[in-house]
Image (cartoon, rainbow, N blue to C red; front, side):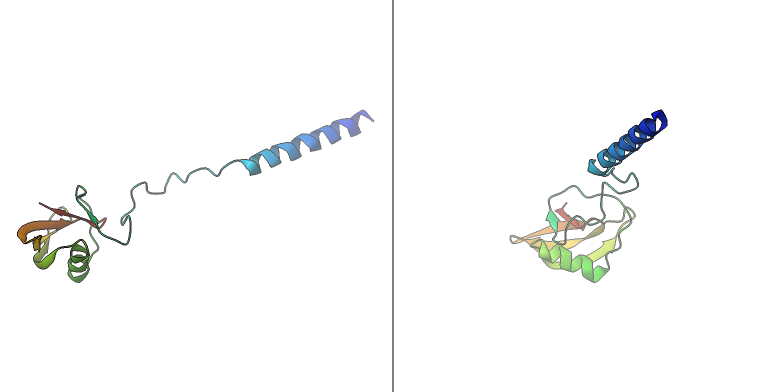
Length: 108
């Protein structure tokens, strides 16, 4: 009889711990990047440009910069920091513009 009581108590504890584990929020994946390559499909203007491997093609870079409100985008070249650099016009002013691997656009 004692063995049966211990067995029942053990099963109850095992089930309770399983239920508690299922109710907990999942652990964050430590390998997940806290800094995604592209934050959003739209251009982010005015953010600090980040160094890193840039996978935008010249055409994609130009379109992304234009989407941020720049016109007459020209002379785009990828620099050693992975930032597309070029000339553009915004609000009637000619500016040096950059695009990082995250899609951030900034006049420099």
